[in-house]
Each structure stands twice: as C-alpha cells, then as structure tokens.
Image 1 (spheres, helix red, strand yellow):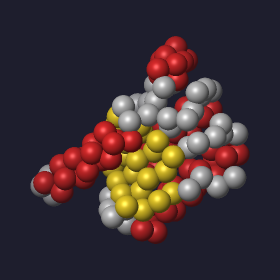
Image 2 (cartoon, helix red, strand yellow):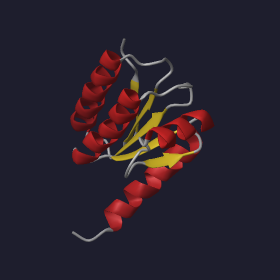
Image 3 (cartoon, rainbow, N blue to C red):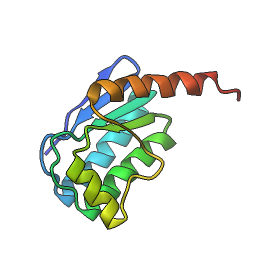
Length: 124
C-alpha cells in the first residue's frame, strides 16, 4: 500500500489514513526519504490524525522516518497525534525524540514553515 506524499511549494505533506503494517512502515520510510531527496523539500509534515493505535515498531518507524528526512535536509513536524496515542507512546517509553509535533495539520504546516525560516537565518 502506498501512502501519498504531496508537494506544496517547499514542503512535503503526507497523511497516514490507515493502520500500518510493519512492511507498510518500512516502505513509507523509503518513499519519504527518497521523495525528500528527489524534490529537495525543505520541510515534511506527517499527519497521523487517523492513527488510533501505535505499537512500538510503528513508533520507532515514525521516529526514524523523521530523523532520516532531517538527515537529507528537511525540517519535520508530526501532527494530529491522538491523546491515546501520546499516552501509549510515553507509557511504552517510545515518545518521539527530537521530533517536532503539532496539534493539527494547520499548526503542523505553520510550524514547519517557521522551522525552515529559522534554519535559513542560522549562520553557516
């Protein structure tokens, strides 16, 4: 199953609308990293609003996907996390480390743009 990755100017947007299998998560990582590199996107917003349950493998895959995208140059924001998912992640000790988050897609988009702007202002 392919998860669509849309480009909006300098950002990529993807929304996970189904429960992911382990194979889907690995394919998603591959697709995201290659799309960031291919497009030169400066930001990536991953919307997980539809995810009601996240196991430890999927949590790790989301965290790694964000880190991989950052390594190829994109600022990453995960948005739309359900309260039960946040609770589960913390209880499992799998909270998203060094990954920006936002309440919803609108806030995620705005936060990604701010991160990109801040990165451009940094010397070096």
